Length: 94
Image (tube, rainbow, N blue to C red; front, side, top):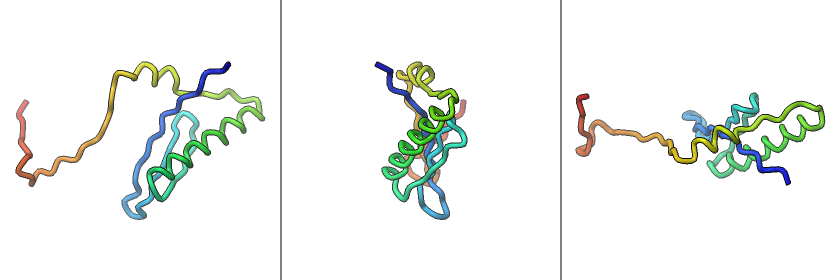
């Protein structure tokens, strides 16, 4: 049985239009979007499936992010916003 393929999906929100853009760098150019985060993820999955199907039909290799993502299982990445005007904001000199 073939192991599942893992893909890193980068999602950004378009500040002007408000929709979510989903990019799969390993399958570049593989970009889609959705009006909500959930829809963008659903569309990304469909885009990945379409690229894989096309590559299989045309005999091209199918890259994935399995090795990289398995190595990062112990890491968590996030982005936070700090409001400098907030009473909870503290500047730390290093």
